[in-house]
Length: 133
Image (cartoon, rainbow, N blue to C red; front, side):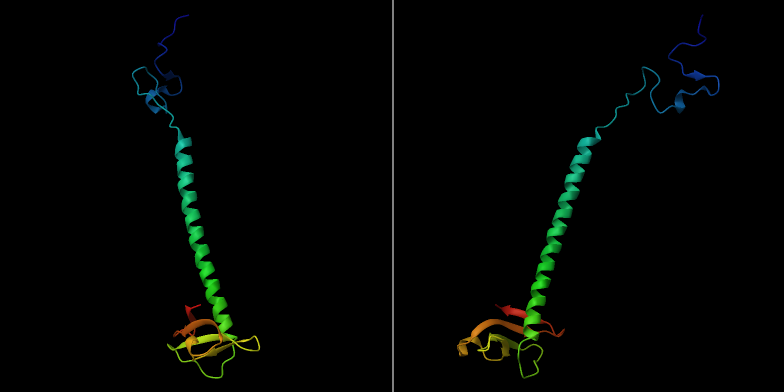
């Protein structure tokens, strides 16, 4: 039994000569098709992305901790005793009273002998900014 065409010729009865349509090389002279090693690319990409996520997480965690610290100081000052209306932009001092409760005063820590908790400034948003702890 003799073949009509040699083995290196791509032919089928339905499609005819269809070597150019195939996704792989069909002759010895065709360029070599190599499958890329994607494992190393995936590994390095995953490492880079995870590092970026970790950095963003640490950044968000730091922002959250700073926000909670600001909130706690503001809560402490707003819950303190004071018998005056604080003026925006002025500096105030928070002390621990004899009764164990905090109170707000205009008197600086070096002017009297009370337990000083912190120095604050009221900003235009009515938020207390910690100047000294």
